[in-house]
Image 1 (spheres, rainbow, N blue to C red):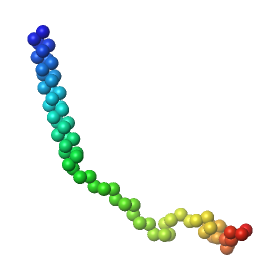
Image 2 (spheres, helix red, strand yellow):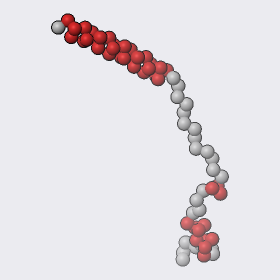
Image 3 (tube, rainbow, N blue to C red):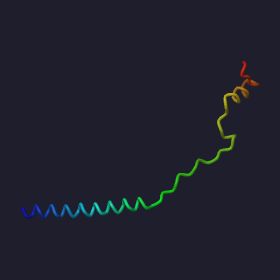
Length: 67
């Protein structure tokens, strides 16, 4: 009976140490500033995908919405 009580006390001490370590880690994570994500880089207009009008104009000549 006494040895079981000693085992439980050891386990309690271990759990209390673990709890303290986790609490400390949580506090460090709360304090540590995280860098904000960088905005996407600017792409020049020639890097944008072509519009359908420019594809039709390139392929078939002048594009007209009435055709």
